[in-house]
Length: 385
Image (cartoon, rainbow, N blue to C red; front, side):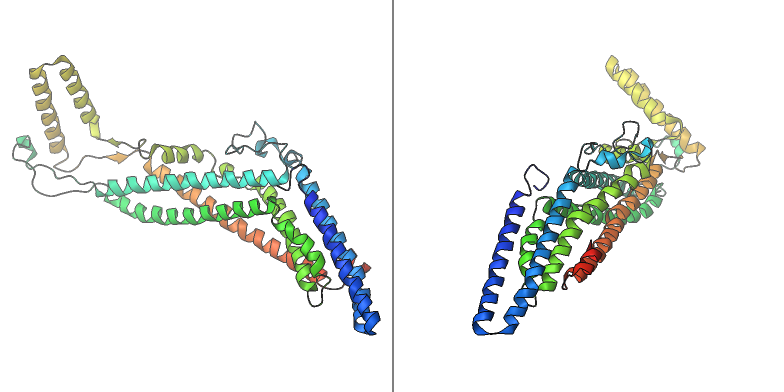
């Protein structure tokens, strides 16, 4: 890991080794030029002797900034805003908690925890969308065949027609299915960002710095060496800084607000919070009466309850003229609405912000690569700085 005690020591040693090897190559080229009386070798050696120290200076500058980034406290930046939106404040009900971001975390660790919180948010939305998808699909298939005529207490069985009171929920099934696909793509995008950040914080991208010292001094390789330096600066310095800033003003939990509890309940309950309610709630009453009669082991009482249940059912059928009484799915539509909001937030957080980050990284790397890919004099050096 780069952000540990002595985590960059190997890069300092390797950069010094690259500098020494490059100077040896330049010295050999100059000696050959003198021996063979070839002015091209001499001109190249005199030009590159300055450029190699420029490359080494930039590598030291990047390593210094990287070490400073590892020691920059997240709380110093988060404390600039109000406490109600501070991700590390205990007074903020929407502070990051999966995992929590400490004020003592450096920028690299805070960026990783922010991505972990975003991944948890999207994962919760995925589970909620899948749960609501299943509930809507099953409810849309529910059908009922009334007994006709109801005045005979259903002694002649069922006949007539079949009704599907929740068939309209099939329209939600398609919407939730599309939302689930979008959430999956967003979740994979966040995982890719987490893998990229792990590669950067592990020092993998920094290994190109010593190589850039050598390449910038080789014939026809200056642009490649400058490009490697620019990529290291853009990925290790700019990318974590962008994620840190986004964690301050783009909190998906705060954007969803009070709907987070509804979303989490839908994801964890897998439908246990949604119940069917009948008009008059006679079914619950009859079930309680049956349990009481069974507890008393009174056969006559059980028979009486069954007859009473059939009578009440028939009366309700008569009142509704043979149609299904008004049944509802409690809280289902509200949960679907919250899920749609969470899906939109997930897509914007994972995809839209990543696109902005890629544009910023690409633009900065391109500009730095253009400057470092040419011979750097004092005026151009000031432009780069």
